[in-house]
Amino acid sequence: MTTPPAGIMNLKAAAARIRARLVQMSHEARAPHLGSALSCVDLLVAAYWGFLRFCPGNMDDDTRDRLILSKGHAAAALYATLAERGIIPSELLATYGRDGSSLPEQMSPGCVPGVEAATGSLGHGLPFGLGMALAGRIRGLPYRVCVVLSDGECNEGTVWEAAMFAAAQKLETLVAMVDRNGWQATGRSNDIMALDPLKEKWQAFGWHAVDVDGHDIGQLIAELCRVPAVQGKPTVLIARTVKGKGVSFMEDDNNWHYRIPNVQELAAARAELGQT
Image (tube, rainbow, N blue to C red; front, top):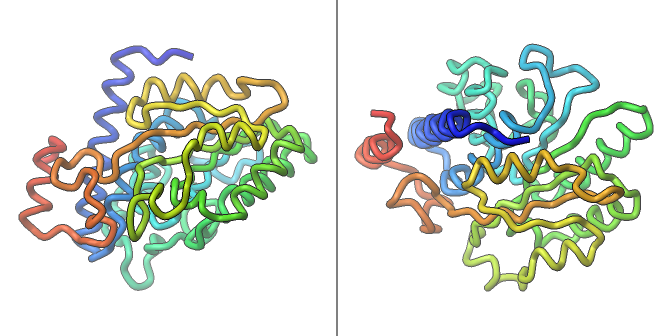
């Protein structure tokens, strides 16, 4: 599938709106993890506009494709994407992180349509998605499952146990996207655990693995729409991204893992994103 250039421009505009909303949500809720949320926006846009098959008004349909945001600390990115896609009301975003809201800082299963699992404890999203894909095969349902992971999350043994089992079961309806922004909470991912060569590691575990530009929405959609690119193999996209993407003074600055934008930073970020 090839998305026309005009369509890509529309998706880039949607991604900019989502990023502006994320900065606003972080500021108003006094909620951290903004850098991590900004880095995965293009992955979510590519999935929700160019790959996943679903009806926005019927997210309980058993045949719908599923997306699991395994990096649960970036929940705001999923909420804002669901709103932009028309799955939840945009007005709900103003309640993010507040007492009694259906949009908690860490997701709970079914808190809103489109949230499939609680993924605040890292390393569980891929096993969960693997179970969903296997259940679909057993039940004879045609859906695909897409799991978005962080690169730091690949430190977890559960990720690699799931990777081995998915390959053994030849779950070609399962696709993972690793948000390879190079950071985790306390430092550079490669300094904490020897993740590289990450693509070759996934290949050794039996997956079809592809390196992609995680901010090139057209390339992401093209690769996603090749799934299953290799018969009998799950697919993983190693998506090279920038933490804090879209806001120059946040990009590749790990302080924004926990920092919250003040009023001046909020205005500057929204202006950069064309959302004054």
